[in-house]
Length: 344
Image (cartoon, rainbow, N blue to C red; front, side, top):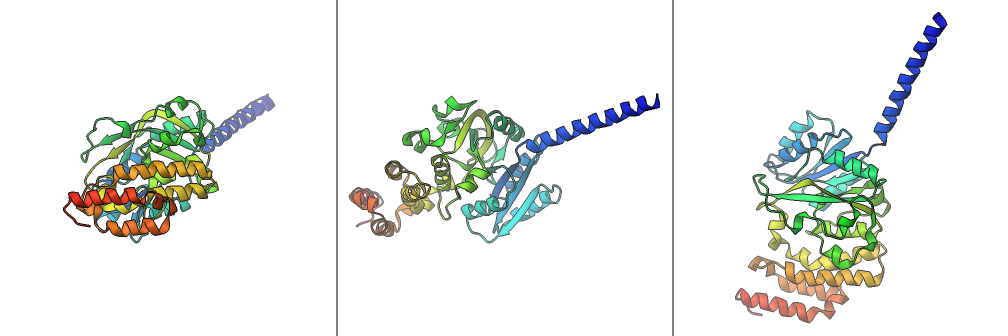
């Protein structure tokens, strides 16, 4: 009788251990996320950003915050949260720009997937669990795109627009995956990119040596295109997971300060795509599409065209394709100067 009781107890213990082992194994098979946030003088907003990440209903994540030489009280805000939650890791550096800060975060991140969450935005509390389900459903893709919701300075929802939605082409891949190289250049170039609008596989980025370009305003465009053109296997979600704040301090609303990056963007995209192995003909199409975009994005202000002659000089000396279009660019610049009362 005692042997039967002992056997029964032993069986129960083994069953419980097996169950616990399987549960632990299953837990560690779930994706691990690295939320990477660069902060420069965002004491007003960064607390909301951190709170939204820590409120996640999904446990497997870390938050890497790079204090990019803030001169306000941003670091104090960050340290207050870090003292209460060990999942927050802080890196301090002298002011070096968004791209260098993100790259530094990528180099130390432990996650399977990276999410670049800006310090003035925030995420849905169920975002990570929903992303984890999508990752499992689509067999660990390299890229996941989803909806974002624009909000104003006070967090009030703004009207939805093309900036918030996925292109119709991407909507065909809600429950399946696509090859990033299968899309037309026009569709990709017309897709409004922002860092928080997608997550990226660490292994894929590492394999293809994809990083953010320093000292470039539209670094998100280059990063996203390089990922697609390297052959990323991606998927799309029809859910709003990210809330994008629009305010006077944001880069997108201060484009006139970054006209130089606007002009150089087609050059950088061409060079990066060539480095990634994109064939010459397709890289040239990208160049021409973004070159056309220069005329739409070039800032309409006196600030935007000051020193424009030095930009033309840069274009003329450094890139043959620009020389082919130099006459058009010079005419464009002359019209802007005339508008603001400046003589050639």
